[in-house]
Amino acid sequence: MLQKEYRTKDGSVVVPYNNAAEYLKGKEQVIKLLPEAIGMMDLSAAPARLEKTLDMGREISPATLIETGSIIAHTRTAFIRRPDRRGPSRVVLFASADSLPKVSTLVVMARRMNDGRYRLLTAYSGIQTPQEPWETDPDTDERDCSLTFWCEHALIHIPNRDVEVRWSTWAEELRTCDSTLQSS
Image (tube, rainbow, N blue to C red):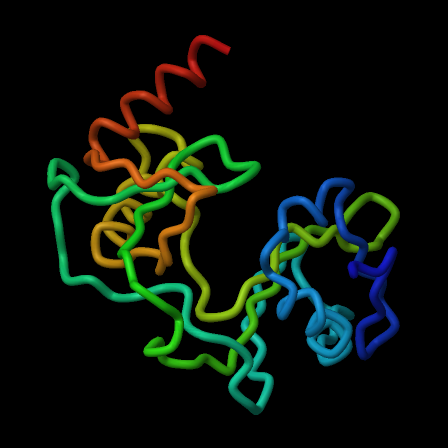
């Protein structure tokens, strides 16, 4: 269960955002590791937006990301819509978690608030990744870099009845996301 606040090595405070429990649903292992991981951090000289990869010194979970080999934005591929996300995530389908490699790193992202505390933005096992393409502004270098990364990587997804897998292209998905954002 998420704590109301976490303390870093230097005494800084990190607080989850209001709907963090819903956002981190299904990441119980990550939630259990937050006190230890945040306790390893020193935020005394940290920037306003923090992205930190912490080596936990042991295998902590199966991998959630895989390098796929490069596709282009018009290549048909699998996508899912994760809870509390405005856009899709590219996935590679696996039958079970049994054969997945294990990772030892935890990524923590946080932003300094006006009162000096940090707001936990996200936490996940694995390596740092750029935002997904739909989270970036169209026609920017950030979008190009994100799209390049996500055309070479995908999240690992073990199919279940709760999440529909859709086949589409990044070009189609971004067109839909960009037009939805413009109309709202």
